[in-house]
Image (tube, rainbow, N blue to C red; front, side, top):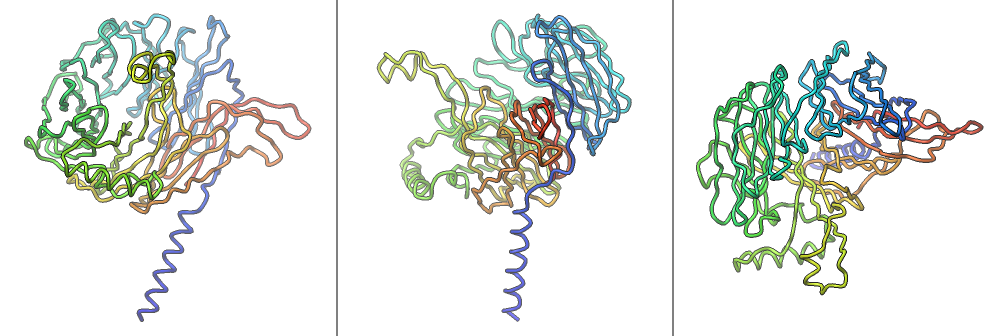
Length: 493
């Protein structure tokens, strides 16, 4: 009997390995006759498993342009297409979907003037309105709650963050109350539609310690409650994502630091209503797989060294910065993912001594990733598992997400990012570490076609286990002239 059970276990394990090793399929592709030099495109996933594709086609002088919104179903079949009347020099920057509408923000030559659009996803009818947002030179986040707009921007004079509320029926926004210190940044903004409130997490620092502030507003921009989230003196709360739910259930999941607030020392979970000093804290050394992006001997040496420093009360030598992703809510808990990165600098003062070069004359020229981590916490904030996926040669010029992360229906965590004409992907199964990366070649209509060039490749999560890859391609078929198109490939994991 024991032998039969062992064989059954091995068989199930084999079947599981086969399932997770299967290459994703590309069941459908759509090519649009767009040229990259004349057309800008944005692909937006909608909650009903359809896609909204925005594109602008214009001349190189931006004196004339046509704007379009087109909806496609899950088979990439066109549902409707509408033109939108927007001034030619405006460019898309942000969107947000609150069914049955998708809202988009556009900016023009005058950084104080913005155009907002409201598109009915049932028939494509679109309202367009221009607003003047004085003292704002950038919009970083955009949420909509019951048709009203909440924006995180930057003050053009002080360069400090701003939180704005805009009633679309009015002409001017209202600045919402918040504490704007020299080191203040917004960590998260979540429109909680079920509870009809918008939650904002503000990270505040004086350079020595850091705390979080959670502010909740109703749909009219009125402050419901404000909480300061403090911790013991040896731990500073750096950044956090907030969960949906009523005020008694909301939790923060994020990072903490010790003395040098530029770097994380670990992760924490904490109910928003919890008392001072409470919460769960997990240092980098406590995580099973966080350091596995290193080679085994290096990881072993790092752990031994850092344990000695920890016992001696010294600051850790590791230097990790993280870019958090939005929380993924599951039926039993939450998945928190983040990209570990470091800035790459261009030094214009190579003639200076080394110690002066590090503090003078450096300019950031990109952000390189080392690995991406994912952690699963139950509803009470207890860490259930953590995992890591090493990332190679991924650099972004701006500090934006380079990897798309989604949770499959069977519990797998799927990670994917574009690499020219390919998609690099990896699946995590709880804490089973696997450093293998898989490459998927983007398929064309026919096997005898050759992709000569791929530009601006992208991938976004779509619905269930599906992603959509997109970008511009020049394709050559045997005996035909090359064609330049914008492709949309459905990828099913």
